[in-house]
Every structure is written in structure tokens, then in C-alpha cells.
Length: 201
Image (cartoon, rainbow, N blue to C red):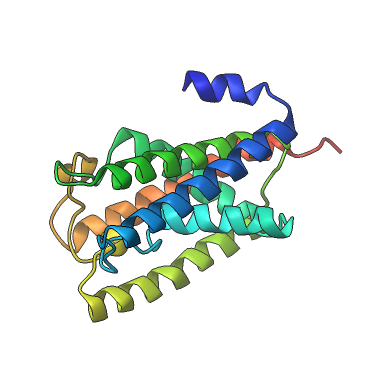
């Protein structure tokens, strides 16, 4: 957190370059190492969890110099970054590259959140509704993918392993409703924080 605090007072260009470099390093190293060591598994390693989807699209937005989907990215990043450091789905059997990838991904989400605040970016009601709809559509795709491939992206089939808050939740499928409610609450809190960035009329 001290690193993020210091980065916040850096120049915008430095923050963007740092974030872009971390995104490239994180994703390239992750998949190259998994492939070279024959550890890649479509049930675990595809970037289909919301945090990793968000991370990929932040990178794409940087590559194309577009801020069109920044509202959706910002809403996902604040929740994902914070939750990623407070809890984890990593276990004692996780590979070092999986641990490295996990924490660097969530650090990147927090760094993007700081960038959003530095840019004085704000979100409208229409944008938050569009973002919720986007996540609903992605969730439906993930459910179908999990059913067909026996995977557990977005934890739709069972609770995540590792040290996390899901042990406090009821069993399947009721915990999913709690996760969705938590996500919507996070969206609302992020919206309230970012609305203060709106230029005064």
C-alpha cells in the first residue's frame, strides 16, 4: 500500500508506463512459463475470472489508446484489487508463477484505480448500468463454459479454494447470490467515490 501511495503522487505518464509494463510482464511471463513447463490447464489458467478479464482489457485499452470502456474497467478494478489482497483462491499446491501472477494482477488493478482518480475520471448512472449488463452477459458465458469444461471460473460450481471469505457463506448455489450482491455493493461504492471527480458546473 505504501508503494501505491508513493505512485499516486507520481506523474501520470510514469503511472501509465509502469502499469503498462507490469501488465505485459505479468501476462507474457505467466503464459510462457506455463506452456514451457507443460503446466497450462484450460480449467485453471485461462484469463476468465473477472479480475483477469479486466486486466486484459486494461492492456487492450492502453494498446489502442482508448478510454471507451474505462467505466467498466474502473468499477471492476476497485473491487478486484482490494478483494484480491484481502483473500485468495491460492492454495499450498499453487505454483510460484501462479502466486506471482495473482498478486501482480491485483496490484495492477489497484494501480489502474489510482490512475482513474488521478485522471479525475467519473462515472454516470448510464455507464454503471451498462457495466452491470456487460458482467451479466460475461457471467452467462462463463456458466456455459464451466458446464462444458468442468471448470470453476467465477466460482459458479463450487466455492473458491484457499483463504477467503467464502467459508462464511452458505453452500452452493446460495453463496453465488451473496457474491453478486457484494459485487453490486462495490459498484455502488465505487460510483459514489468517482462521482466526486465530476467537474463542477
